[in-house]
Image (tube, rainbow, N blue to C red; front, top):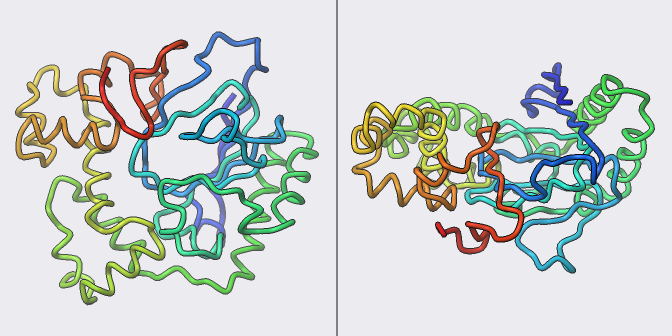
Length: 288
């Protein structure tokens, strides 16, 4: 079961949504144990409420464990998500530019990484997870986490730069256009200052952020390619040609567009992986 809420102010300034997934216990489901998680560019905070650890992507099995509260992203590339243990997970999705006041570090330090939340919050991370585990129902868990985030924001010494929100909204709204060079003129900042703000508050450069949003725009409308044809589809989504579209899909998805269509799951950002051999590598994304 999936439950979510849109937070209230002041949490809403930094957090897009808070969600809770409660599924079957390990051994009671036929769902794939691993799936490919596609990048969104967002920073997420995750709490495993049933297990005392998370399995991390991109490491050998013996090395890929982390405490039961982690920060993920922002990712530009896909990673393998182990779903077998994640039968009760509570998550926070931050707005672009919203994570820095919550976490207290430059978001660039988190790029393409999973980091233990207690590395950033200390003992507060463990205390909060204990409260979430003890909460009697889904609604209480969601509101408990919302209150904790509100408290941290109210007492944070970091303030999100206003440029991060408006510039990422502009780039997300024009993903097929080459608008990065217009940011300075549009918002009254030097290119150097824009790069600094994106590095600290978004974690990606303006160009990397727009590339990712262009990919995600194409991903959401990928079924249109069946009647448009790949060349026209590529052109309509801001790619110079079909080869350019394929290169960008491989960079952000690890798959070609046609391979994604063959293997995609029910959710846009998740691709089930074969139970024995993977058709993608997290460290070196490629088609089989």
